[in-house]
Amino acid sequence: MKKKIYRLEHWSYVTAHQHNGNSGLCGGVHGHPKFPDDKTIVTSPIEEYDAEEDAFITRSGSRYKLGDIDPEYNEMYPGAKERLIMAIRHKKRSETMHAENTLSIKKEPPKKNATEDDVADWLKDDDSPMELMDDDDDDKHVGGQ
Image 1: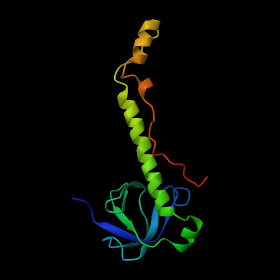
Image 2: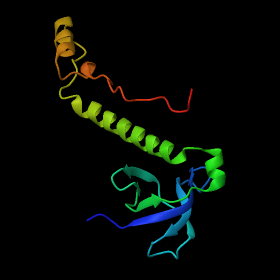
Image 3: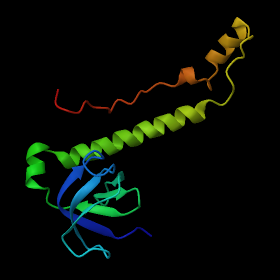
Image 4: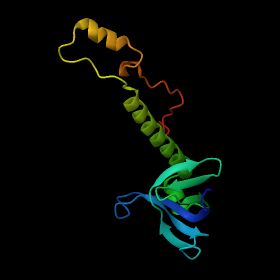
């Protein structure tokens, strides 16, 4: 069963540098049992985005929908929600690629005293890390340049 989704109004994103070493969403929370409505909070770090529910999931497992963005923050960072979603997806893709690369090495590389033929056989084996390439065509440059 999924957790209840809380709502953040007048939200912004704060970095670890800005908030005691923790990054997260900052805003007036609504519907949270621990806080009165419109109490300003900073969430734990954002780990995922659930597109189906349009909700951000924090490290603690809490789920938040974003209401109106803080006007000053929006002026400084137009498109902030979309950029945050792209950053989360990029982070997840990077973590997945790292895990796949780590798991794909199914056998030990050739020993120091291996012959050239041993190395050549290892390199052409389908399980070798030399076969791994990032062919993800949907990566896009962020920042408008």
